[in-house]
Image (cartoon, helix red, strand yellow):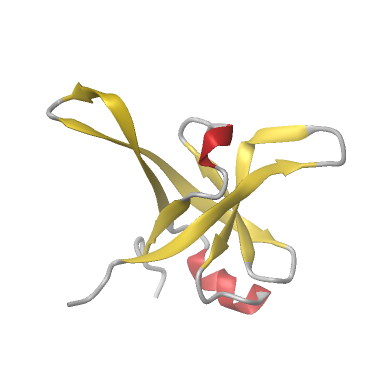
Length: 104
């Protein structure tokens, strides 16, 4: 069976020394260790799945979708923009990086 996603971890918001920019999140991808490897993932969709307390449409699970926009540094980290900004409680949690849309 083929897996259609790669796991990643939310590392935090884009930030400077004193200011935080919650519009952009920094994500570390599993098995990606340099800038050349992360270029494959540019434009791919990202899903942060979390569990809420209230049932909506028969499910307690919700998702916030985003898209990988550019690399961050030389160690394989990437920046992503989500439809609504990720909360601080998401830091350190996992995301799914879908292997579509494909640019091959």
